[in-house]
Amino acid sequence: MPMQKFLPEDFLWGAATSAHQVEGHQHNNWSVWEDSVAGKLVVGAEKRLKGEVLDWPAIKTEATNPKNYISGDAADHYNRFHEDFDILQKLGCNAYRFSVEWSRVEPEPDKYDEAALDHYADMVSELKKRRIEPLVTLHHFTDPVWLEGCGGWHGKETPERFGKFSEQVVRKLGKEVIYWSTINEPGSYLLERYLGGGAWPQWPIITMNPANGYRYLKNVVKAHKLAREAVKSVNPEAQVGINHALIDYQLGRRDPLSFALKKGLDYIPDTYLLKRLKDEMDYIGVNYYMRSAVKVGLSSPQTWAQKCVGSDPQNDMGWGIYPEGIYNVTQKVKKYGLPILITENGIPDAADTRRAQFIRDHIDALKRSRADGADIRGYFYWSLLDNYEWSEGFWPKFGLVAVSRENQKRTVRRSAEEYAKIISQHRSRPRQF
Ligand code: BGC
Image (cartoon, rainbow, N blue to C red; front, side, top):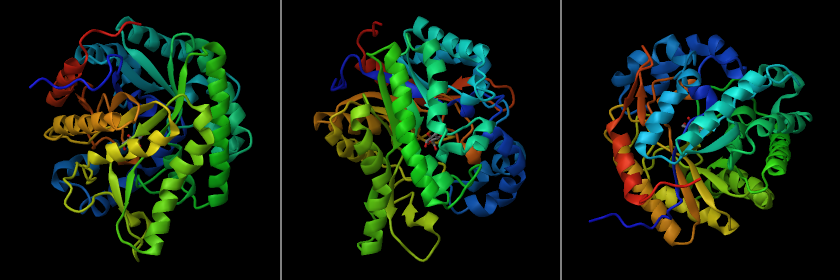
């Protein structure tokens, strides 16, 4: 039976990456930190991962190799983006989300590198040649090394500094790019940097400092507004959003503490940021990966929000697979009355046995959510390429395209071909720009 077309003709079908995870050859706060921590991550790997991941023996060699934890040349996307864009085009994608690396554009405070800006302009024009719409993220977790000395993301100067950096990027790309995301997952950055860590085993600086966390959130609001103003001054029609990690938090136990924690976990992206910024966003970016059962217990706070619920099937990292959650989170944010882009949704699946079904099920759930009133306008699979999964390193394989760690060879996975089929079933004619 032909698949029904509940999605509009101009729906954005894409894939996503972030600079630090794919470009390679970085000098930023993460690359500096990786060198100091790789050894420690190797020593702790077995203890940390054995009971958590789906198949420890399958990942053991990679997860116990110190090179796994150093981004190094990553997927060398900085040099190989032409080849990667050809793949995107072959898959039938009409959109690509990538991020601009702040440390390349502004290697020293107030000194901008025109060659780095030219590089990103080149990426944009190569995408456009292939009729692929760019979605540019201005901040995806990494910072220039010097930012910490200027107070870091909780410091007074940072929103203005970020605003100025954004102006430079917009000066170069603003006329060509319609879709922008200012800041990737502020809720995750808050948790990792200011509230003791959580999703990843390590982060360059982890503190438990809610006061600085609050300063950070206020700065995110300011920084977003400044960056959006910069974009709009060049192209008033541009669509500017923030993308949020929306986990489908569910109560794991009916007691007041678990209830309060669930409220708190929902509060940051939803109540604090979305409420404050709803008039300053043209769309809501949703990154959805999992549901989580919230249950306050005697174990460490990190285990209070469980990443796999009941008998949900698991991905390679041990996270539960729960497509209904993407329905739930998009239904939750439809109250803001804004278009929604799924800016990330993906699965680490080295054997490539679950990815195609994962994509199909999540898109079906999105169609239902659209039919029930959520204005969903695009889907970006995470990720186009196998990449550096932060402090887990390279062993989790999220890519539609496998990337060899030996020689950078690209291999399009079978699931990518399935994604291409889904796209072609929905796109009867190429999008015109
Ligand atoms: C981040 C990505 C990351 C992905 C999978 C998202 O939270 O934006 O950078 O790779 O999750 O963990």
